[in-house]
Image (cartoon, rainbow, N blue to C red):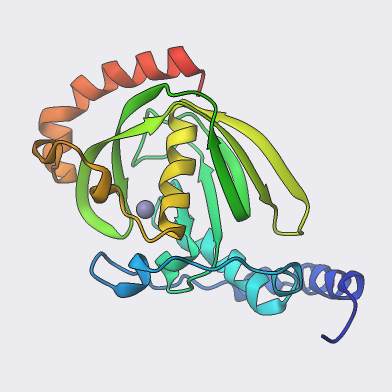
Length: 214
Ligand code: ZN
């Protein structure tokens, strides 16, 4: 209800230029075992998307992801079971082999694999502290969603970038990467990954980036 969407947009834009960003908050991240991570999140309407609460949630998700050096974060990870996720990879220290991804906000995303082709990804998650494991992911995907302004997004993601999209959208369906680990003997802490698995995986990672260009 209330003001038409155009007016709301202008109001939000005005607040941003007035230092609205200064109000961004780092939110608490839910950890494995919290029921919010196991819920199927609900879609949001364009009116909800334009609300101050949801625009602030998106700003906070970006801030929280950056603070924790995540490659992405989904709304249920900050205790909001809504179909929103954000991704960004900028020379990420947690995942130095991952190609960069510009800041992307996905609202009500839908993923469609473009082939049966899959690769092994050594994943981690801000909601599963100090654990990594190998997960099979589709190598090429079509991503359809809305951005934070409600404009359509339609893109193709490949390789590690496609893996990051799949990981984040899984969160919206109540799934964690550990559910998809086929070989539990690949599970390791971050320290043991560095000691015993990093080198072997970096070789594979180079081959993945060469194959998919992402
Ligand atoms: Zn995650």
